[in-house]
Structure formats: structure tokens, C-alpha cells
Image 1 (cartoon, rainbow, N blue to C red):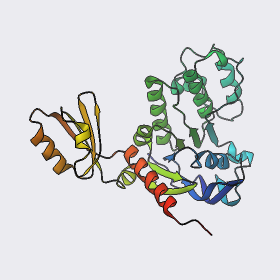
Image 2 (image 1 turned 90 degrees about the horizontal axis):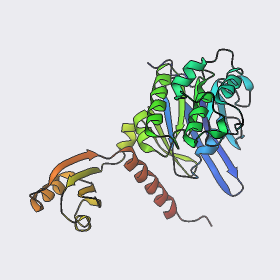
Image 3 (image 1 turned 180 degrees about the vertical axis):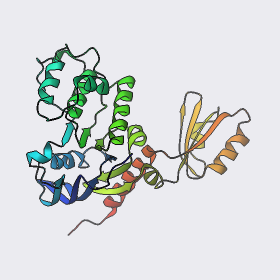
Image 4 (image 1 turned 30 degrees about the vertical axis):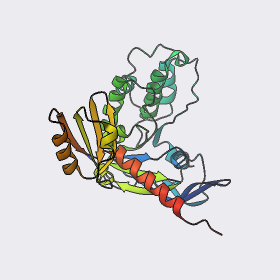
Length: 308
């Protein structure tokens, strides 16, 4: 259950430039308790810069950044955060239990070691040295360190990269539990099915600007396409030329077709292949919407005349 919707962190009109590169261009971003916000965008869109500003690792050229009503440069504000970045400077020679003990000592009321182990899936790893763990095991340790201080805001940058399916499911379950407790979560991920499964809100950024924001359903509604799947011997290359068909491809015996309007295409499929089976029609997913939004925004930007 969500707690108060008072903002715990926000970026307002933030701009940040690195030389000739405009990393953020007037970005607004707000995080509320009990809410998971997925920050999506292609590489170079500005996601990492936005996170660095929230962490106090960078200072904006313009605009405002607040964390729990304070500057993110203040220690009192940063103590309310848990962070898991794509790279982590963790001592390879320390054992997992030593890393947990050290990190827990920084907080007045940390989670128990047992809770950290269960929530991050660290069973059997406490006696292992961090440098001897696999990449996926190291990511689980990093997640445990991020949550051990009972953060009010959890920032996760590509947290499930390198995790197997079981470890990913554990992390997803823990995130749902934390959000239910009122923790605000900022998640960046290239796994769009992950954002679709977890996010309360989605913000899609491109070239440092927010181009779409809302619930998963609202983002998906930007795209009216449908996806048709079936078992058929028809040629994907031929179907790709039909009216209303945006894309057609074959995955073994199965056809996957992206269409603007499904009714006419389905009728034609059934007419041309009497043996067609396992027909399924679904609305566009978050991945389809993300691609359409970013491609359309990029095309619009390229069509603008260059300044004299």
C-alpha cells in the first residue's frame, strides 16, 4: 500500500552539459514514496547523468535537484538512499559477510544479516570472497548492500544485468515488497519486460528530455499497434507487403506480425491458410511503445532545420 505521495526527490528544469554534449535539457523528474519509477532511454539519453545529479556526484548547470527536501550533497539526505550502480568499487579480498557488516555499520537501524541474505538471495555466499564470485553473484551482493540500511529511496541502475532467471525473480519480489512498505525506487533497465512488470510510472527520455511519462498503460497507449502470432506456412516476406502490416518475421513455424489494424490482417491470414493454428492477437507492449516513441522523436528532431 502506498504511503503519502509527497515527493522524496525531484529534478526540476535540470540542464547539464559536458563540452559540446547537452546531457540533460530541462529534465523534470519526481519520485514519490511507495512508487517504482522506471527511467528508460537509449544509450546516451541522459539516464546516468540524472542519477549522478540525484546522488550529488554532479551539479546541474541550471535547474534544481532536491533529495528529501535537501541538497543531495548533504550527508543527511544521502543517508536516506540505497544505491546500486552498474560499476561498484568493492574490495575483492573481503568476504560477503564482512562487506555486509561494514555497510550495515554506517546506518543506525540496518536490516539484519538474515534479512539481507533472504532479500538478495545470498544463501551460501557469506563466507565467499567478493572477488571470487561470479558476475551475477556480485550483483546480488551489491543489491544486498543497497538495501541493508533500510533506504527510503532506492536507486538501481541496470540491477539485473548478469542475473539468472531465479535471481531476477528474487530481486523482483524484493522490490515489490519494498515498494509496498513505502520505499521509492528509481530503476533504469534495458529489459523492458522488467519495467513493464514492476513500474508504477515510466519516464522515457531522449537527448536529455522527457518525451513521454505516465503509467505503463499510458505509455503503451501511445502506440495503437497490435501483434499477431500464429502457426502458419505463409511467407513472412509476402505478408510484410500487405496493407496494415508494419513488420512480419518468422520464428521457426511461428509467424509474428506487427499490424496497425488486426481485423483485416487476421481475416486474410485465415482465408489464405486453412491450416493456420494457435492464432493470438495482443496489444503493443512497452517495448513496442518505447521503440516507436524514441524513433518518432528522433526522426522529428532530425527533420528540424539547423540553426543558422
